[in-house]
Structure formats: C-alpha cells, structure tokens
Length: 251
Length: 251
Image (cartoon, rainbow over all chains, first blue to last red; front, side, top):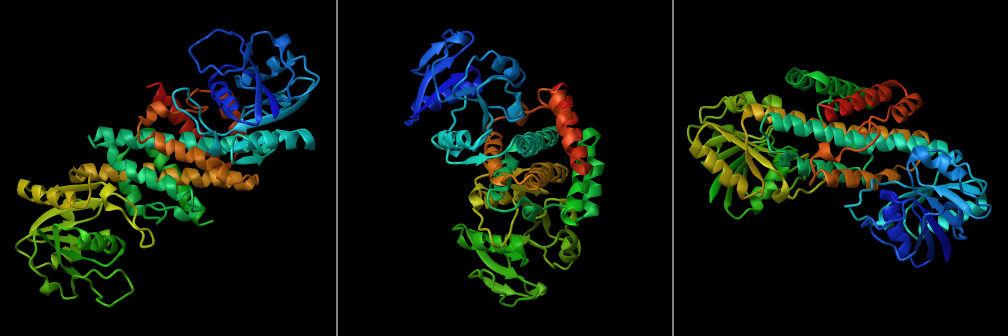
C-alpha cells in the first residue's frame, strides 16, 4: 500500500480524491483543503485537514493547486520525509521549494467537475530526482492508469505546447468551422461525422500520412476560391495553415 | 424502387456502387465506366457499360468523377428524361451542362478504397432545381443515410471551407503536435486520449464553450513562454491562432 496525502480542492484534486479513494493499493490517508468546508463536492472517505502543520505521515504528497501558487505553497510544507509531487504540465520539477524529495505527477487530460474521468485510459507523465522515487512514482501512477510515461521537465514543457496544438487549436478550428456554417445557415451537425473520422484516424495513422484537402494536393485554384470567400483572421489562418501544409509535405 | 445509373469508377463511385447494390429500395440498373475492365475493385452485380450513348433508362443518374471533368462529361450525356446529379462538394449545380434536370448529391466524408464506409451515419447534402426533383433526391438519399440535408450551391461552397478547417486543418494541428513530440523524444501516444476527448466533446458542446488553454485564459505569460520555445511556421501559427482565440472570446 502506498500512503498518499492530497493537497488541494480544485478540479484536479476533486478527481484525484475520487480515484485515490477507490484504488485498492493506495492508502489515501489525508486531504488538505485550505477551506475545509463541505462544498457539495465528492467527499472522499479520508480524513480532511486545513492545518498545513498537521499533515499525516505518507509516502507521497500530491499537490493539486494552481500553477502560480505551487512554489509559495510548497515552501510552507515542513516535511523532511516522503516524496512531494505537483500535478502541473507547465511547471518544472524545480518549482517545488520544499526540503523533502521532489517529483511531478502530471495526468494529461482536461478536467471539469461535471465530467467523470476514467483514469485507466489517461496518460500520466512522471518525473523524480532519483531512481528510487521514480520507481515509487511509477508504481503509484500504474495503479491508477494503464499509460505511464517518464519524461523530464523540459520534455513536459514541449508536451504542453504539443497539447495546445492537438487540443486547444484543434478545438478553435471546430469553432471557426461552426461560425462559417452558422453564417450560411448550415447545420453544424453535418460536420460532426467528419470530425469524428479525422480524430479516429490519428489514433492509428501518422497524421502526416492521413492529410487530405486542397493544400495537401497543392490545389491553388480551390485555395484561391476559398480565400476569396472568407475574410479577417479566418483568411489569415486559412492562408498560413495551407502554406504550412504545402511546405511540410514538400520538405 | 428508384432506378439509378452510376457514372464513374473512382473512390466515391466504388463506395456508391456498393451501397446502391445493397440498398433494398434502390434499383441499381447500370454502371458506366470509361474503361470497363475488371480492375479488382468491388464488382456490383449490376450491368456495366463503357458506351456513353447506351445508358439505361433511370430516375437518377449519379456522376462520380473528378471535379474538373464534370462539365465536359455532362455535355456528352444525351438524356432528356431523368435527374442528373454530381457528387462534388466544391462544384455548383450549374457545373452540369446536360439537357436533363440537374441536381447535387454530395456525401460529406473522406473516401478511400481501403476503408469501408457506413453510409447510414454519413451526412448527404442534396440540391435540385425544382421541388419534385428535390423530393425524389431526398427520398433517394434517405434510403442510404439517416442524415440528409438540403443546401444550395453557395451554402455547399461554404460547407466545403468549413470542412477544410474541421478536417484538414485539424489534422495539420495533429501533425505539428506530433513533430513537437518527435523532436523531444516524447511518445505521441500520450496525446491520443486528449485528441479523442476534444473531438468527442464537440459532438455535444458548442466548441466556443468547450475552449480551454492559455489563449482562452489570455495567459500571456504561458503564451510568451511557449512562443520562445518554437520557431518558424509553428511559431507563426501559434501566435495567430492564439490571437484569434483571444479575439473571438472577447467579441
């Protein structure tokens, strides 16, 4: 059994509390919440505390709070034993400023309280300063998810940028597509099967090989026709991404 | 029973022949193929011909050939009865130059011979010059797919642009994400569950409401940090799309 203390009460902490509570070989001994009131959230069966100097003894302390607060908060941790990890994708391991051993436990997914999470399929990336902690963290992560990857802080920073392209920017492409549909009174539902197909294809095929469309074919006639029908930032985006597709496929 | 003649032998014709052959209330009377040889493709049980002046009598003639060839090919059709439709997303109804009635029957999906197609879930957009043909075309499309939409030529042109954003550009975002991963020796698999989640969310939620990430939060600190770590066209794309997300959410 791995003894775990969770520190935080936000979206990520909410889902972690749930999975820690339900995982057989995790002993979820305590949750620290700055304002330890019953706010209607999921209540793990574990003990709660709002006293930072009354933390229980544990193998791993998981900090799930806002990125910007990690350094200051970790300074307050008066721990000499155990491994302290944060859960942020964009902060390096060195953001932790405690005396105890440091690590990172970063589950790559978007979390919202309304949406239940199946941790088994969520990739967790881990990092620790020494081999023993890495082993412990791997074992811990593996008990929650089937997909655990060891990556360092500089890789995690790149991964975060890649995730912005694969998730946030992709979603913005959907937004633009919907606006184009809306402005022509076309039901956006028409595009949904195509969106599904594209995202399913990338699960199996290298996206570079799966590329289709006028830019892939370098069909300047269609590209020009399309550009003449849109304006503003959409037009800039259409032109720039088309240019990028053409360049990539010829490089 | 709706009597149908199919004209063409490419990817789209391949899949249409299959579904016409299997649909109970379609009477698939003939397929025209310019080079009527057995090329190992799926062989519908219908009669084949390579004589453009020997077309069978039918209710609907479906042209599934390259966009650029539609006008010239349709000129050769010596038909006075029946409805002639093309299957192109980017050509207007007026691209047809035959004497018979004209229409469009455009299934919105990417087709490749390797990938079998479940037409029931593929949206088909239709257009015809008069009400009676529209009704016939609707009935015909409905016997193949659950999702049939009537849209005009100018809407279809916009839909095609929207599809470029939702499909081709989205796939390019995946490509860039993979390149960023590759260059840092990160397994691209880490991003796949996130890609899946994002594309599933848009099936239910307006993408504008589902937007997350640094640009959504207007987190200039992270945006600048990310921009400092990438270069070339990726950097331009990151900056432009981030600006567009920030603008949209404040408009």
